[in-house]
Amino acid sequence: MSPTILIIDDEQIIIRALSRAFQKEGFQVFTASDGQEGLQKIQSQNPSLILLDIIMPKLSGLELLEQIRHAHITTPVILMTAYSDAKTAAKAKELGVSAYLTKPFNNIDDVIALAKKTLS
Image (cartoon, rainbow, N blue to C red; front, side):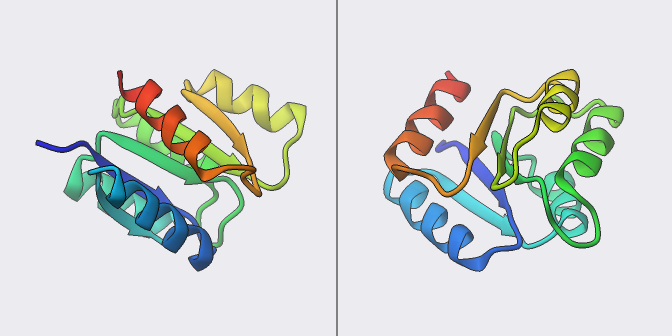
């Protein structure tokens, strides 16, 4: 069975680009455009890996990460953001993120390689 990935981001261009790239690599891809929808997909789809944007409407990536960790969901999470700062990175590390990516991505192949490494 192929690994499943849930991409949670409010930028549709990011969702489309990552979805296509991961599907070409054999991943089954689910998407959500905000944190609330993402939480529902996590619970219903039980993904192998979550790619999670930090700045989103309704429920931020860090708020969502807190909720899933408090629910004892241990799915690996790679955080993505265009706005990185030390406080956010520290909080993310405290919540057990697997990796932290800064957007825009230099090379989508690097994102795929990081996802595969995280899942191995």
